[in-house]
Length: 250
Image 1 (cartoon, rainbow, N blue to C red):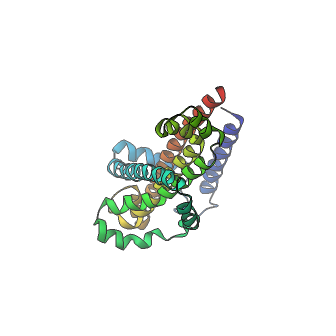
Image 2: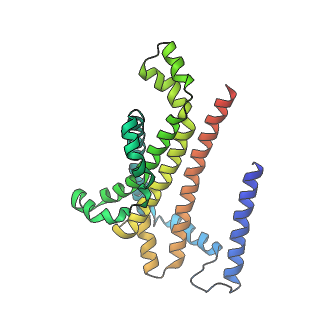
């Protein structure tokens, strides 16, 4: 493990230990702050009994669908807008202020258009994630060295070959950043939507536990969600580092 990784691990361990001591020492109000050891034990019992399996599968399915659609649409829109400078200039102010929009205010409209069920939740996750991928695609294409497309024209490479051999590899670091942001935003959008819109899913289960003062279950499900996000982010970070290492080795 790198020095930075050791430092991050030490900070997390110290924070968990401090919370454990504060909860057991009475510094925090009993019942509100549950010791991390009890939260972990509760999570283990939930996983062993399979109580969260259905909610977990539904939430991950919603996130995967929202994120997949956002990645495809965001990359496609970014590539199209990059090739149309006038449209790019018209859209830049909207892209800059996009995340100031209150997405959940559109939920009644989404219900009317998409009906009741998982589709409005997926739509919220998609709306959160798509612009992150679109902006990352624009940034990646903006930073392609001008000499590379000129070299492609000298070698008479077609548009498809130029995109696959030059543009995509050159923009890959920025695209990976967009992918990581899109995944994070998809999780945020879906979980938040499940809090207020759904009758199932991890977000709904956390909200249900909170409303019924079942703090151990609430914290356990939050820990489960945090673990999933950390694992997904770690996988994406590892893939990004391997890509960058291969590029440096060339």
